[in-house]
Length: 425
Ligand SMILES: [Fe+2]
Image 1 (cartoon, rainbow, N blue to C red):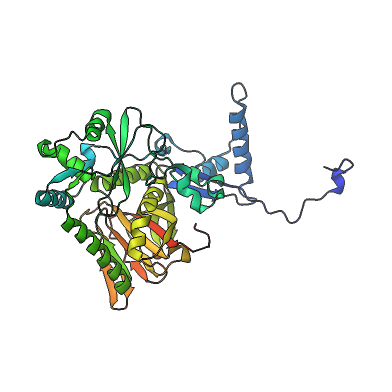
Image 2 (cartoon, rainbow, N blue to C red):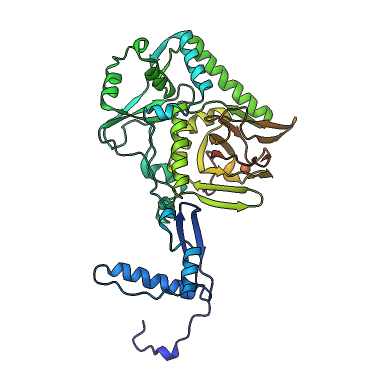
């Protein structure tokens, strides 16, 4: 301040723009943001500041903060005061464990396909796994963790507090377990699997006799890709041919479906993780006419981890060098709809990955995504773990209303050409 300034000679800066906003979570309505309305909300904000000040003063510093019935009503409506049963839960970390309850979420048709493939060629330990023994990220260039996962969104992404609000908790501390990073046999995405010390010791020693495993254990290890069908020259040629066909399909139709881009147990773990996050009020609700009723999380840890892990594979399918932009995880509520549209440049390549469906987890009963192609309108149905790759900027896409009583969990991974120089958010 100028030393001789006289307060009476000063006036309030007429260019002032006052913004006061807050964000709260409630179990029953997720994450919600409010902006102060002037002058109606002034008493509410004064009460809030007084309450925060009293709480900050700590022991002995408590003071009575006036709470009229008007302020009480507004504080409840705007999520500042909350009943015990609506208190939000903690953001939980993500883990895929060898857990029979998770295996029970795996569609039977996926297990049958895995068992059948192994009957043809025999079963082996996945030779390209990497073991993580401490909480430090593994020294393996195929695995990227921590803040590096969000670096491409700009250094200020974290500073803006975005990471604080995007279910950023990564993987849990290892404590008594080990983490095996297991490459998908086709997409090569590295998938974290937490297991107890004795199991991973056996795996490390290669001392598991695959043929003598109990059926339930073998199913669990197959469902994580720790055990895989024995690769043969024929299977390698088939995989190369599959990539070619995916590439051609995308060029011809503007979209292409890739079944099971992640292991069935990884997808089951994702389904449970996102259900927990949703139930604890960690999603933001959106009611937008063109987008329908959906709850979402922007660039959460799990979506960004697998976006990163799938970059190489998606680059092969779209047949050009690409880099990740942003992600959304959406929980669509019944009657959600997606009007016909194309996307902004940050969505040059879109990957919609189905994770959950409450009504019918099978492919036949899944919620269709429609595409406009040169040959007319086409529809795809994705079971859990299936993805459709399409050009968000060139291929019009839409969804009809989700039937009453149904919900759907979808991860949207976005990529752009490697030489794209705009914002990636
Ligand atoms: Fe879109």
